[in-house]
Length: 136
Picture (tube, one colour):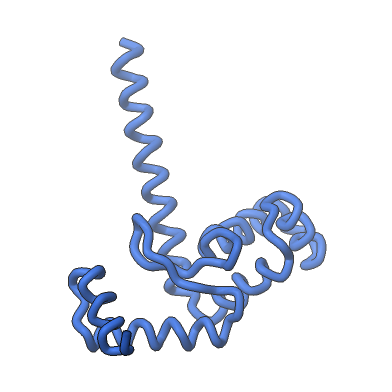
């Protein structure tokens, strides 16, 4: 199958994308993967996002890094990274890939973290309302 045919199939599976928008997105993603080996892109419930090969989404790693830094401000870089490897199971090489990707595209990753935080807050608020209703 030729590239143009494969692109048309991709567009048909990704409603709302024009051929040119899909081509632009895929070229951009390809360049990002070239710049950050270990990152790939995948569709999901929240849209298309950067993921680590054999690992979690980049935003998940960065949220863990930020949380660890807030809760353990006195740790050295090596201590922080060692703790993250131990607590997340993500290899050090991939944590560094995620950090490098975030450094290049912080707005994208920070927006994904904010969306995840908002979704978690909304789910917790709904759960509390249910509990309050059932508790009488």
